[in-house]
Amino acid sequence: MRSGNKDDGSKAVIVANGRYPHHPVPLSVIKNAPYIVCCDGAANHFIEAGGYPDAIVGDCDSISEENR
Image 1 (spheres, rainbow, N blue to C red):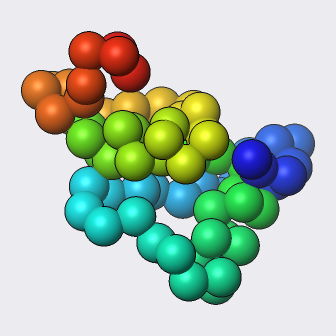
Image 2: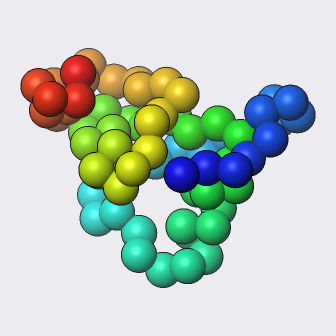
């Protein structure tokens, strides 16, 4: 899903829980991000969209059993 270069290590995108974006601009930012950090239940949306987060922050009470 992503094509970001992890060598620079200077940028990350934080995905918050809510409606997952469908507009090309935020999708491009996500696709090109070297690192993705999901806030709790946002991991569900990100994984459903075909991604795999680099990190998940929060108490994980909103993450589905399937995605834990």
